[in-house]
Amino acid sequence: MEPGGSILDSIGQEIIGVMSPVSICMFLVVLLVYSLYNPATTTTIRTATNLVYMDSPTDSTAQKLEGSLLNAAVFIILIAFVTFLLVLLYYYNFTRFLVQYTRFSAFAVFSAMGGSVLLSLIQHFSFPVDVVTFCVLHFNFTIVGTLCVLSSGGPFALKQSYMVALGIIMAAWFTKLPEWTAWVLLVALAVYDSVAVLAPGGPLKLLVELAASRDEELPALMYEVRPTVDMGRSGIRGSSLGLLVGGVTGDNSGSNGGAVELQVVLRNDNDNNEN
Image 1 (cartoon, helix red, strand yellow):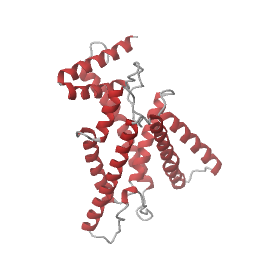
Image 2: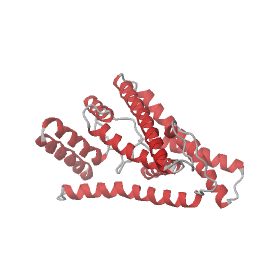
Image 3: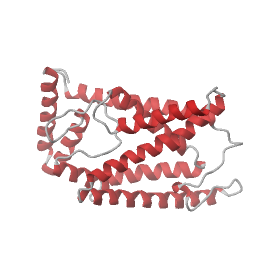
Image 4: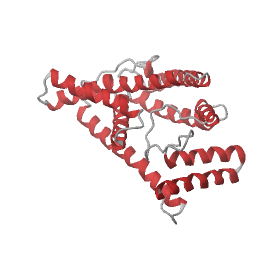
């Protein structure tokens, strides 16, 4: 934030910085689905999101709704179990394992899921690419992306681009789900995320509070508006996370404590800009 600027100006810049990649991601996903989606040739695949019910054109609306609710319930239970498992691992200081697990997750998305999307694009538009060239390009894309998304070094714009690509790949795969399952799952995930972050005892809330109590950084695939700022052991990741820390502090010690924390974060940003 510039000297003399208001907090609203800083928050506005952060909101624009977050909304821009979200808008780009949504626009590119729409183009991707419009280019590749063909109802006549699309087949439903068995994934963790439809373990119980497989959609059929002959099923009634009630059957589709009931099956979609069952699929969403099972998937949310799996997500909750994995999230609590991650909290348990972090509680017992398996941080290195969590970092490698996150890297493996990024590698799986870029290699398998991203490769499938890229291959579909090449086949649809008939790009003249041989197998060797495709493998070399895809290998480089995967390795650079895996190293980039969790690295504090390297070009920051490249890291942001890979995070947007990660969102595009995941969204493109979710469009392969049956329509009823996709919409019900979308609502269920939104509700679960709200509960996990805001509810007392929520797994994500516990994870953030545990990291704050240890003054550590969480290994996560997270889009950053600003580069990571090294501020000692705390490792505050830009002013957007600083605002989040201020809000969490305010919940525990009252609104005045949150305001003081917010002022400290913004003052540190100003000091860094002046230096």
